[in-house]
Amino acid sequence: MDRLIIPFTLTLAALAGCTSAPTRPPTTDAPDAAPAPSPPAFAQDADASAPTVTALGPQHGCTKIRTAALGAILRSVGVAMDAGVPGSAAQLYVTGADALGLARYGERTREPLTGSTAGAEKRDDVFVLASIEIQRASKLGAWTAPACPGTALFDAAHELTLDGASCLMGKPARAQHLAIAHELVADVIAAADPAEAPADARDRAERIVVATLLSAAHGCE
Amino acid sequence: MRRSMVSTPMMLVLAGTAACQDDAALPDDFAQRAPAVTAPGAGPAPVVPVVVDPRVVDYGEALRTASLKLVGDIPTLADVRALRDAADKKAFYEGRIDALLADPRFAATQIAWWQSTFKTGSSGAADPNGPDFDAAATFAASVVVGRRPFTDLFTATSGTCTTFVNGSFVPADCPGGAQAVGILTDPGLLAQYYGNLAFRRVRFVQETFACSAFPAEFAAQPTVIDTGVYTSPWPFDSISGHRTRATPSIDFQSTSGRVCANCHSTLNHVAPLFGIYGKDGLPAASFVVPKPGAAQATREDWIPTGQPLAWRSGTNVDDLRALGAAIANDPDVQRCAVKRVYDFAWSRGDIVDDQATLSDDVVATLTDDFTRGGYDLARVLRSVFVSDDFVRF
Image 1 (cartoon, helix red, strand yellow):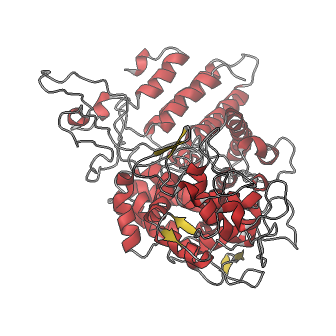
Image 2: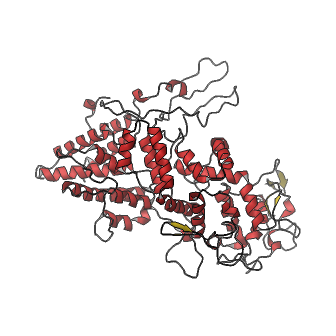
């Protein structure tokens, strides 16, 4: 695995999971217009003599992507869900269901709501295999994601498109996603073994971009 | 931080994280919203470091998570684009929530949600002669999707063994011939929770619908019994044990370890109602649940002769129908339904298993709307997903 995968994955993960609007680099993006703020749900003001601690409001949790929903996401972004293909994302998704989390109703056990380390690793392995399929199809002009018909993932200059990133994440992509993806591709190519064909290095970099976006966007429900 | 400073992979990681915390992204009233600790006469309040990032409105993120929860898939690019370009994002987002609640896929995800909540469902190859382990969850889903009162889960008298065929709910009566009492008489559920003295069934009802583990009731003042502290409002001698029977099958009045009666004072007044349902979940003419060392329990194994059956102390019931009505009327149960929806939407885990408890105050407005609005749980779902709090991340 390329030595840059992990740090770049973390970088994009941090950014993809971030919903604040960073101010640098300059962008036309802006946070959505705020509605009237609600009163803090957990404010405590009963006793004036007691210390006052006011929370900023409730926080979203991070329940894992349900295994069925993971399959739906893969299908929506154009992964062929034929588990009979060896080495495919679909096969790993099906055979890895135990690690991803399944209900065992015979034992009165629901599908886990919180993720496990093994489950997160399996999910990311599925995304890595999915990225190979998606990038290959994109390169051939044959990427057909049911959720995003007619969308190009990378443009003629091999740059990740805004719609392509939005398709993979299921939410509006920001300019920062594209900027970091661009930098990621450039760095992977620059760090490639001189013996590796430039086109192969670019393909590899694009797969890393796809896998990273999927992993960063779909770490939680 | 400028991009020119980003020279190492680790710096890139930090840059990605820092982008979430940029001061320029803070709301104008941030200083007023920051937590502060003050004490009378102590002078200016010390500055307390903010450990929680202020949240910002992000309808894109909200639509993604709502879509996953309501229909089990991410939004289409067409919806993502439309949201991005919408002049009134709030109105567009609320319209999409309404569309998701009306989406045919909502029924399937509701079935899965109730299966998860009930911890019941088909496991492996279905037994054509066995109970339908999906029926209870399917019926519950049909109540929500059909905008029927949530209380039907405890009071419906027919059509409770619902199936889901070709995208439609098909109501049917359960086998066994007895009149239904919502999901309380569902054979699959009763078979799933079959066990000694029907306690597993009572625990299921308590934890699923009252959102708390036993003990379920507490006296205003605890009392000391032998060497233990008894906390239940029931008289200590209202259940079977060494003080009420010469040779009790099980000493529910034991205080040698824990004070068993703290939980069993409630449990034992409910469990006999479920005791006539066998391993197959079907009703019999007499008690058929086992007890340790014996094939069948008797009423006196739970409570002394003359003791009433009851949902709670002071809420006596004669039969399952009355129990269903008592459960439906219990404010804790109504509040629990709202809390489960809230925890689901906010990705907080299970209120009992994961201890994702909520203050009653947090859901007070939602609960009030729920009870005034005909116990429509889909309405609560909508209210949570479109709330100003929910769309902040």
